[in-house]
Length: 427
Image (cartoon, rainbow, N blue to C red; front, side):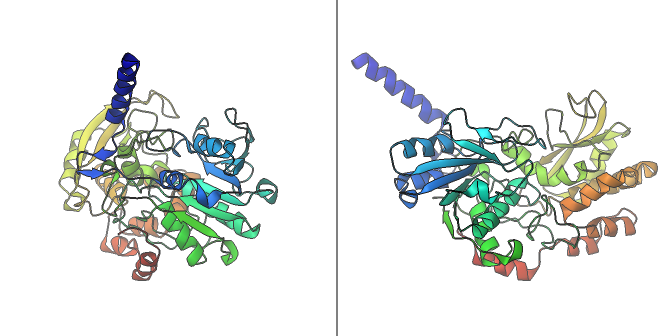
C-alpha cells in the first residue's frame, strides 16, 4: 500500500509540474476559467435544466479535461441533462480543417447529438434548439473581430432570443489582454459578414463574456433582440494580463493558431494574408508570423527599412527565406521578414503593421504593389475583414503611404469606448 501511495503521489506531483495551480512568474494563483468556477458551484445554475453546449477543444479546465466531458459526467450524476452539442468552425472535437464545413451527427464519446454551426447554417435553427432550456458557450477567443468564434456567439444569442432559450457564457481570458483596443468599430454598409459580424473594433480588448453583455445591452443582435444571458466570470483575471500571466495551458484555437504567439500575430498579418499576394507563414511552421513573397529579392533590406520605422517600435523584423510545406504556395520559395513583437506596451498598432510593410515594399518594388496585383475577389475579402474599404482607399490615395488620416480613421470612437466600459467584468 505504501508503494502505491508513493507512485500515486509522484503522479500527482508530475501533474502539478505540468499544470501548476499558481504562476511562478507573477507569484499569483493561476486564473480559473468559467468552467472551473461553474464546477466549483456544483453546476448549480444548470440544476434541473436541459443543456446544450457550444464548444470545441479549447473548452477545457486547467487540467485539460474537456468541458464536454465535464458536463457529460455531471449530467450522468443527475444534476441536469446534456441534450445537444453545437460545433463551431473546426468542430466540437477539433477534427475539421479551417474553412471546411462541420457535419452534424453524434459525439462518439458521449453519444450526445451534435449540430453543426459551420456548414449549411451558422445560426441554430428552432429544430436544433428544441428541448433545450439553456445553451452554454465555452470557447477560447483570440481577441480579434474577424475570428469566427465571436460571430458564432452572436448568432447563438440571436437564435436563443428568438426561441426563448437562455444563454450562459463560460468566460475565458483574452490572450491579447484587456487593454489594447484597435480599429474603427463601424462596419460599413455592405461589408457585414461572418468575419465582421458585429460593430466592435478589430482588436476589441474584451472577453467573450463581456462581448455577450455588450451585444445584449446595446441591442447589437439582429433586429435588436435580447436573450436571457448569464456570464460565469473567471476568477483571478485582470485586464493587464496577457496569456503567459494566466498560468493556463494553451490549446490551439484552430490549426493555424497553435500558440499564444500566433494569436498575437493573427491581427498583425491575418488581414494582408487575404490578398493572396503575400505569404504570412500559413503552410509553414510560423503561421501568421511572416510576410514574404517569391519576388522579394532583398529580404535584408526590407527588414532594415522596417526596423528603422519609429512607428513600429515594439517589433523587430528578421529576414527569412523558406518554402511552405502545404497550401497553394507549397514548395514556392518565399523571401521576406519574420515578425517579432518584442514589447507589447510599446506597440502602437498591431493592425497597421501590414500597411507599413506594403508601404516599404511599394518603395522597393513599385511594379509589385501587393494591393495592385491582388485579384478582385481577394480585395473584396480583405475589405470584409477590415469592415469596409475606407482604410484601403486611404492607403492607395496617399500613394501607398501610411498617413495620419489612416491612423485617425482606424481609432475606436470615444463613444464606443464609453459604452464598452459599461460591460467590462474585470479591471
